[in-house]
Amino acid sequence: MRDGSHISLIALGDMLSHTLLAADSLRKEGIFADVIDMHTIKPIDEDLVLSSARKTGRVVTVEDHQIIGGLGSAIAEVLSEKHPALLYRIGLRNTFAESGQYHLLLDKYEMSENHIVAAARRLLKR
Image 1 (cartoon, one colour):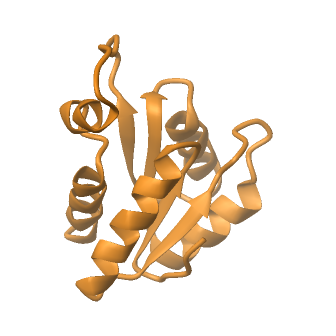
Image 2 (cartoon, rainbow, N blue to C red):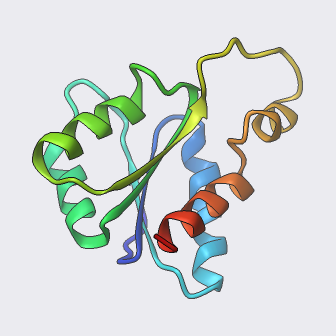
């Protein structure tokens, strides 16, 4: 989706559009993100994950559901076994989500474009 060398952003589903917007915001700051549309978790595309992680050394996963047992966990397993890299997982953190306006829920649960950008910046400082 995007090719970059500073940070890997791996998203699925509806969160891909927010991740692409975040990558565009980061690009304006001179931060080039490798954006991956991980359309399936099982089987996970290990080669794609590892190629990106080797290039950037920093990975942010973005999903709009529980991070436990989802995309973030699958990426963590690949990285821990094959190529350790800094990782931050964006998604629900062991809680039930409320109903409401989608953009407000993304902000409440720290999954919006701004939160993706902030997570990328934090990892880049490490």
